[in-house]
Length: 143
Image (cartoon, rainbow, N blue to C red; front, side, top):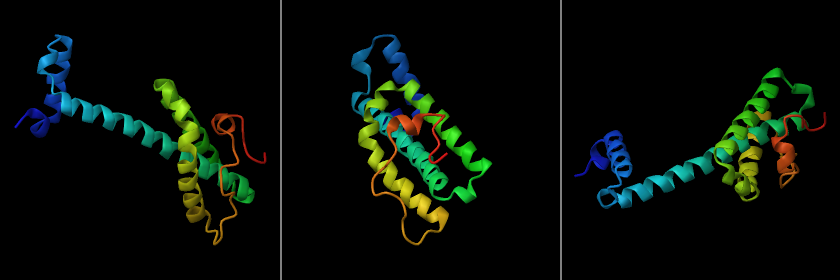
């Protein structure tokens, strides 16, 4: 049994040491590939989730203007900041936004429905916001 299965942290240290010392034939290639793919998937999931939270709050902001609050504004701003950091750290994710936006929007409309208590969705079937607007700190729907 290798350390990948028994002590993940130690396995990472071992793989790092092997890479640093160019002992490439000693690397645990199958598990390295699996971990790298997993890391990439986590980044995409974080992007989808942060977009969904942001979109849900933008929808609530637009469709419940009477309930607008500082908390909603803070959440919108925080999600935009976190998305900016994520896209700064992984710029290639920006080109994935058009493909990931529909999934994020579906998640956002479900969340917004639950949070608003609307019995029937007043939200557009597809996202009416451009990616530029979604990420723009100065954009507020119907403001």
